[in-house]
Image: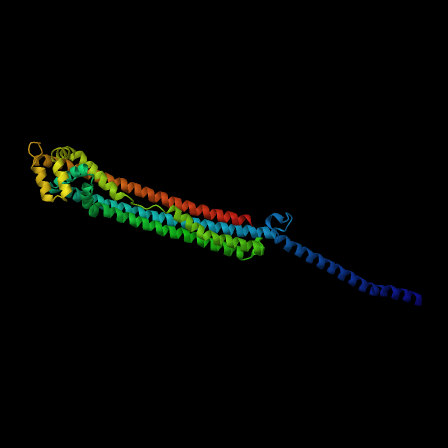
Length: 353
């Protein structure tokens, strides 16, 4: 009986001796697992700080997901900037077109008044005399007379419209540069929010920020290059010469007679100084035996009126078409240059992610 109790007591006491061993083994296992977790965590952090080409292909997918999200946010910023630049270009282009077309419409409405001035009895006689004088003496007084009639009614309205369109192009230049600058700032902010999550070390991120900052003056220079030409250059000379050419087609035979019969008198008048206008009219009507009389000028005036008006309207139409075409080309060139710059900046940034 006693031996049986002793055996039972020993068997019950054995687990008490084994419990410390089990606890020790469990503690060792936990310690080993903690060490393995620490090593794994440090390996992951080191892999994330490597350059793009040095990252392991077996790295955890969490960093890749963060980079993909950052890349998507960069694409969204670029798309928003593209939309902003397109809207600005469309708005400024529409305003510039309207300024040119309104100005040219005003110039066309002033053509009748300018032509009536040039084709009056006094104006046509003086114009014929000045054309003959210019031919003999290599002067340009007929052009000066034409310019005096066209400038307030046709030339100035056109130039005001061109200046307004040029102003719109200047404001577009500022808007495009501002949009590109805002994009550069936004990209720097996006990549700077968490460089480690984005897969960038601090030095790489700082280098990217320097590149983005350097792109700001570049885009301003790009836009300036595309906005260098000026609208309306030489428009005054075009209007005057086209009018003079039309006048020569109608008054040419009168000018020829005048040169043939009054060449010596014209040369003397130039040598003595400007010929008074009243004397010029007298010369025109006092040429006897040449067939030149008041009837010749009257008839010429009837032909001169529609000829000069047609010439002026066509010149204004050409100026309008050329100016609108220049504005469209320059706006398109500015928009294309800025968008190419922005896309190149984003592509360079994403290569480093």
